Length: 351
Ligand SMILES: NC(=O)c1ccc[n+]([C@@H]2O[C@H](COP(=O)([O-])OP(=O)(O)OC[C@H]3O[C@@H](n4cnc5c(N)ncnc54)[C@H](OP(=O)(O)O)[C@@H]3O)[C@@H](O)[C@H]2O)c1
Image (tube, protein in one colour):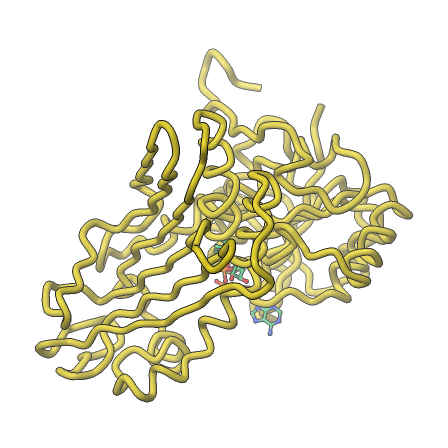
């Protein structure tokens, strides 16, 4: 069985997704949407830096909707509900690393659910953080435990891998005085995904959370000038930030999600130290369980920032056969069977 797949947007995730679709034995790339005018007419393989695929990039939604395809990997910079609706209404299942991980039950969700059912398609939100580390993997590990008292999921990333000053300085607010960085929108921007993860874990483990989630944002400062791809981070300005979202029961945290972003060359205030880049999942339970994920980040200050996007792209790509087979509607990890990758093609197992 081969599923016909369209890639929507060819940023870092989209390019890794194209490579993944081409390498997947049950998938065939049949369409590619791009936002950038300069990419229109290019071969999707050329955009992704691989051999030509025979698929020409277009920026026309109508053209994409008219393609006979089973699924779309939807990974633009920002999700557009109108585009998502149009793609679903054209009879294509949709997998995305932007939202829909465990959408709250409200009229908006009901409308999207109804649209999926009307067109017999599935919408699945996935990714890595959120979309893996913060709900899929802790829930999988929880099956080994009893008396689960607390679950923690935490990212440790070195922001020196990110060379875009307009994002790192102007949106993340690194290199600013702490009172400026305290106005960061990131706690709110990231909350949408992480609060869905917290709700999914609470739902499945059986916690009824307090109505309001607890959030915090703390910072450490450079204790000497730190070199970075976005320029020097001066002494006394923000060089590390920790964002935290918690689900509580009677005021006591039971689920903690943290994101640590640092420019950590060993010169951060208040004893902050990143250690190796990693993701951690820890369950305070019987037995107490801790798992650390290495390899999902690109090397610090390396040229290979795309390495960090393989996992979120592949979580989308590998979900496609399961999503196409699933019933109509919004389907989360709680609805789908186990999602797995596929073996590399070689002389003996080429498909
Ligand atoms: N859940 C997770 O764990 C996870 C992990 C990584 C990323 N993500 C999300 O996945 C999405 C894609 O990430 P990315 O790293 O691929 O981002 P990216 O490199 O910035 O690429 C986004 C692409 O969107 C298109 N685009 C740019 N401006 C646009 C606009 N104004 N309107 C519509 N499309 C526009 C461009 O496509 P073309 O280049 O084709 O023109 C661009 O390359 C982001 O929303 C990101 O937050 C989620």
